[in-house]
Length: 504
Image (cartoon, rainbow, N blue to C red; front, side, top):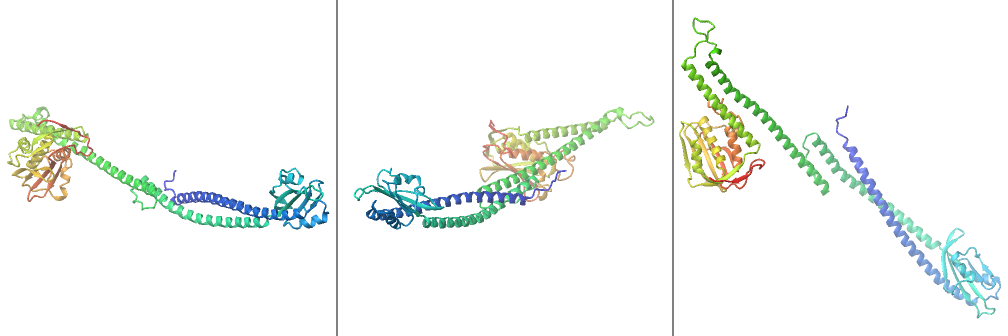
């Protein structure tokens, strides 16, 4: 069995936070270490270069003095005394005889300086190289001088090793400072990373909660601003999508409920005339009559002319009602399927309204008034359907007199009002009267209506860009159609119909 409980968003948020913190710290560590290492290396090179320049200058001055005092004729003690003039251990080498006097052996001298102390160097420039002596870093310097002016001639080389303790101490101090600065920077960056991760984690957790709400079929609250444009955009998209999904779902459920109710109502409306027709057929068919003639049990009684006429009348009314009902159902089906086109033409509104009124067979007096010169670029058949259904509704359910008025309306529109002196429609039912098979004043069987006329009129009004409503206009009931004088495009719910030009 699967667990239907929602996942723990805190764990997800913690994972996201740890992920962000880890990568932030890793990146900060790499950048900080690289920066610190670069600074330390650059400073180390500068420190060593400065120290070496100073040592070379001092070595040059000291060797100049030493060479002025040195002679190959001097003994070892004399040379040994003069090696003490140098800051570090030093050795004098007679390149002619190979005699070496001092604290350094030739094995201590690094390879780059061997030519100098070996007598194979080219020139008398100072040679130098960093190396190690007795485990300490030192700076070796060597130079040779031609002593031909001296008694005995020959050449003498001087080599010394100056300790680099002072610059090394500076470098170590710099390293310690760099490490401390790096740790401090990492601490600051780590704190900033934690705060940033929490700041990112909260809106991400909010997005996860929104996604879970959407998955459960509920609309989440709109997310508060997080300060991150991308995350805010995702949150708005999720919320707007959830709202649209909820509206779509509600509309689909409402459509399904209306469809079920429509099928049920249609079946009921069809059953009523069928029942009446069945009863009439029972009367007309003597074999099925249940009435026996007097004195002749079991023998069907003959149908009287009055009974036959009544049955035929019932059949006629029922057939006409079924015809009207089926025609209305087919018209609504075409409207729902968006297969009904719109043909626009130049129409005299007053003349068309008068024509529509004449199509309604009624003994009720119907008055038509209004602007005889009003013309509109609209669908004549749709307008005729709307007016005839409104007038038929007023005749069936209202009370005389019935008045139809045509007038101009604000906003480049025209209005057609159909008024009767009946009991009117309660305000709470004025929207419901446009529903299919809606009943406001009892059964439709007494009036012969199908309950679909106003629904067809409403859909037709939308096709010509208008709207149909019940308005308060004193006693009685008034239906008003508002439509544009010029229909440029259909305005149905999905704009699936297309307007085509036509003639009036």
